[in-house]
Image 1 (cartoon, rainbow, N blue to C red):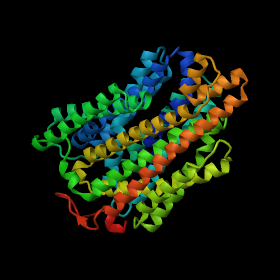
Image 2 (image 1 turned 180 degrees about the horizontal axis):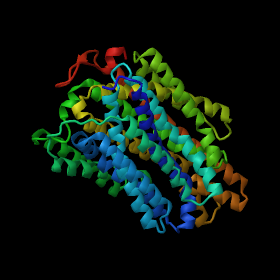
Image 3 (image 1 turned 120 degrees about the vertical axis):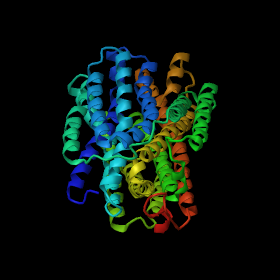
Image 4 (image 1 turned 90 degrees about the vertical axis):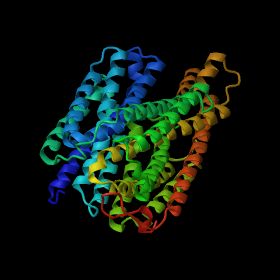
Length: 503
């Protein structure tokens, strides 16, 4: 265990790695219109720029954690950072949509290695006393990419060519490489474990199919046969993985982890928080642009209260400990989201900023202690694959949140927008999305249509926020039913479950 101030320098290195991933995820959305024009990308191409990244990320999380445990986490982290930098440069200078899709897939692979290994290294570097503070800083850095991506991306697109939005990763990667070499210690898990090839194949198939099916459900609707079939296939593969893990001599996942209520509760609660928060972040940028008329830069500025609230919440967690904090955080998130459901097309930004900041504070209360409960239940030997499992659950939770809440939002918008009297093509475009509706209304100079689009989108968003708030309330119920007792993971030290601290 690192006991000197070097651990905080190591944390800085890991935070820069995380920031690179966060920026990459949000900056792409700003560049999509430009990519459509400059690369001649179709709607399907634009979807695959994101989907290729997500699918490879989902497939790689669990194997990457296990391989890091076996062969060295620092070594794998350095290799993933190099790949991330190379793939970012490849994205910047891609000449065709196919090249960009392939480069995004490479970025997904690098991210799949970086994400679980950061959690594994935090387990080794920080002890139970300092880990909550470190996790608060890490979660905040993870969320910092949300407003910074549109801010930096919007500015770069205004002054340079579209490839520049990917090149901003390079200086971060270079610093991350130098910092990891200097400050992050090498660590291993069980070096004698054999590679669980059937487990890897089943986990990759299950997570890819489930993630893809959820994405398709968000695009086609929750009742689409193809989306449902893909989701079912993913669930079946993951069920097969669970069965195989009980029989495998060297299983990819130690199912005994789920005997620890600290791990299970923390992983589930961080997944609930990811579901709610990323569903919120799916709706807000569209609200600011379609209803408020903001550009990408202005949207990034208006998302800053999320970070402000998260910072406040994280600081209070560090001062108060975890007693009742997770439950309070979910209550804050639920209250903020339900208050946000009262947002109207004419609501001032002050009201929106207030409930968004409270939602961010709720995340700051919830995510660090929930992840600390899960990570704290891991032994150093299994921290890589355990952290990969936590990240996989959060990734699926985020995808489900975006898909379900996006479907709810779009259904509400299409039911409420008035396209009476419009030509068939224009009416279909208006119903396709609020952004297209605003463009049609402005092209036609139709103030009534513009007002209808904005009010319909706000109505759909409000319905989605109610659903998101109810999910957060379900997390409060989960906190309440967690038993208040200690558990001792096999071969590890006694760990306090989330509820033991009074939640």
